[in-house]
Image (cartoon, rainbow over all chains, first blue to last red; front, side, top):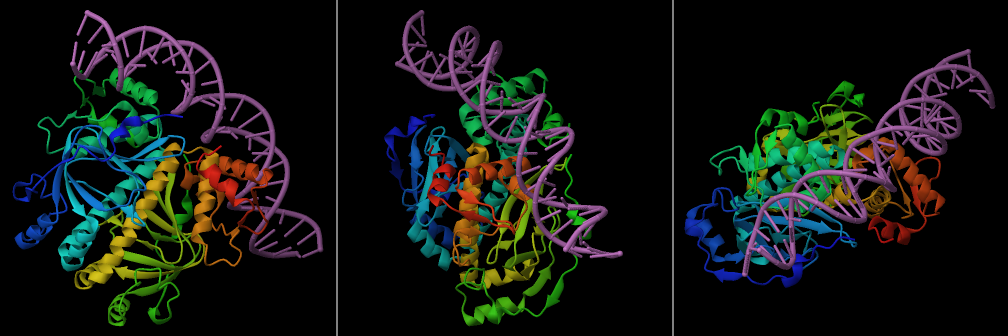
Amino acid sequence: MRSHSHTASAVTTQSEAYSPCENCNVAQMSLCHALSCEELRELSAISTSLEVGRGVTIINETDSADYLFNVTAGSIKLFKLLPDGRRQMTGFLFPGDFLGIAMNDLYAYSAEAIEDSRLCRFPREKLEGLLSRLPQLENRLLNMVSHELVLAQDQMLLLGRKTAVEKVSSFLITLVKRGGESSADKHLVPLPMGRSDIGDYLGLTTETVSRTLTNLKKQKIIAIPSGGGIEILDQESLNELAEGLD
Amino acid sequence: MRSHSHTASAVTTQSEAYSPCENCNVAQMSLCHALSCEELRELSAISTSLEVGRGVTIINETDSADYLFNVTAGSIKLFKLLPDGRRQMTGFLFPGDFLGIAMNDLYAYSAEAIEDSRLCRFPREKLEGLLSRLPQLENRLLNMVSHELVLAQDQMLLLGRKTAVEKVSSFLITLVKRGGESSADKHLVPLPMGRSDIGDYLGLTTETVSRTLTNLKKQKIIAIPSGGGIEILDQESLNELAEGLD
DNA sequence: CGCTATTTTGACCCCGTTCAAAACTAGTGG
DNA sequence: CCACTAGTTTTGAACGGGGTCAAAATAGCG
């Protein structure tokens, strides 16, 4: 039905380098959080840093799940496909997030770089060996996965029960919350992904996302500056729209 | 808008008894899986067995998340609500499943017994103490949460991109897979929850669920015997319908 | 600037919702 | 065993939010 053919070049085009954990910019938010120096050394010993260009496929749904990843720069999209090409985004990842969750040793989703990105890669087998020896690390991973699960449940509520406006408003709000610290002006939200990606994340079509954004713009709740991103003009209204309070 | 007012009696009506872990019927599928005798003894020391009647609320979204639970008998529904009453089921639980995932020490969803059920309850604080001393247990929990996350992602695909027939067919198939071992005749699936619960799980209305089931019945793919449950007559067709292959 | 991909806008349509009523089902008590 | 009630499920008819298809506008880029 629809085609998403960016996956042409498969899992290649990845330049490797010695893992620079010492000056990692996301250590506080990533897997590595709350590890001792010694533990961090052990973890860094099994990790590889790699860069991927925009549009490059990092993992493929149903491929053998040999690695776990931690995003250190850029942004990544996760998605699942139906046989006829319909696509559902299961998440957008930013620095500090991890990916590679598996089911029966197979990846549960595909992942692709939205823009040029950098990742930290851990061989699953070696990491699991470490997990059994470093309870801190395992606990950290448990917390991260639990957090993911809670977000997934929020997304179910959104997908199953919210209207188009509510979906788009909710989406903008989560982006604001995420990029909170990083951006100087908290009200200008970067939008590295395209309308079609957003649609597939919210269970809408590209057209509906576009129409809804234009409506919000007409109501002076947001502004859409050329050059990408969305400016939040009326966060209060947006919050209410997101929860269906009018 | 809509009301779901079974929650009248809050978290009461729970008869407590000394935890009978020794003859637990779900030890192999639950948290307790893969623990040594000694570890099991420690776990059972902090657990309380409790029974809840049909319709009783076990936990409430946004309540302080003081306990984790393991279902040992019956069936439980998990859900989230929007301010105006719209409801999204985030899961149905059966013996062996656990609940109590939290976000900032608050439960992320409400839970209610679909039928008379039994649960094993663990105080979160004590359990977390155990986790740091029993890596086996923490690993087990990590695996269970990861599994939940994968299922949640499947559900996102369903909610965001599948049609009504595809949703209902997928739902029936997951029920078949779950109750696989327990039921003598694999083709008779028990349906303890009502149509409205199913609707709120699939992002549909009661009416659409009903209509879709009647259609499947007319096509001789399922049968709806009086006395509850659904009989799968043509699993092959159901599988194809679930993936949109026609 | 011209070429391509993405986004926006417009017109029409359909799947699932909504609203309403009828048919079941399960208790409860005479 | 039937009558009565209350809840749930099914069926029907009409509507509408978001999808589909198509074309115009805009952005990105060599």
